[in-house]
Amino acid sequence: MNEIEPQEEQGGGLKQRLPAIAGIQAPESKARLLLSSLGIVALVIGLYFMLIDIAYWLPEKYGDTFLDLAGPLEGLPAEGIWTVQAILLRILACGLCLLLIYGFFKLFHNRRLRLPFRRITAEQKSVMYKHIVFYFLVLAGINLLFSFTALGELVAEGSEPESIEVGWLGQLVFFSFIVIVGPLFEEILFRGFLHKRLRLAFSFWPAFLVSGLVFSALHFVPGEPLSYNLYGIGSTLVFSYFVTKTFEATDNIWTAFIFHGLYNGWVMLWMFVENAFTSFA
Image (cartoon, rainbow, N blue to C red):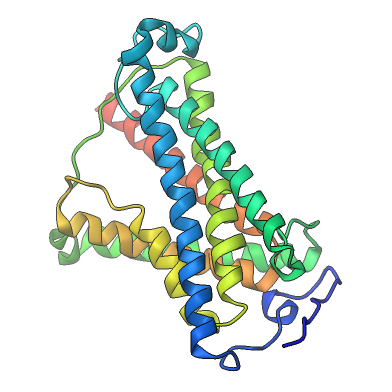
């Protein structure tokens, strides 16, 4: 099959930029593309967690010297997934994995698979804002249903996270990971790479279900009740749908990243407000 070049104009979504080859490729070609895409994503995610595990092993090997890298912060526990040290290590792991993803893009050398970083046009901004507003309305409706109806009794409460006191530097590091580094890493991997690569051979729904389910499954929390995890995975899948639709409509990583970052920022703000009211009660 001849290579079909994507359109180069700023406007237009992913559907217009990719050739309409869904259903044309042989099943064997689709299977190879699906398995290779999932294999690459598994490799990147595996590398990410391997780097974190290695980093957690370093303090046992080199003692307190490694823990002092956090800077002028006191009162932090030496263990826990949300200590300043752990978050810094996650940011470093994300950076290294992003380099690996970039290497895969260069290896494929396919213009249809290039990282879609472009200036956000006025049309793309309008699409992004509409999706954000609509999603937040849907999310608010779901929260109200589970908060004020019998549906809330179907979801078991998760365990309370360990509360740690950190200074302004720790809060800045935590915020940068949750709102900036994490969303950028996930959007490049799941939307910019996995979903876009699958869209070369599949229609929207098969590509979304694969990328969305893998993305949602990574939010499974070991040790929590099944109903808690099912609710979390389901809500993450709904969130993934709106982010993917935004990416499809714009073919721009920045729009998906802004959507994701705003959502995470809203969740963090809600947590801080909730904790503030709890402390005053």
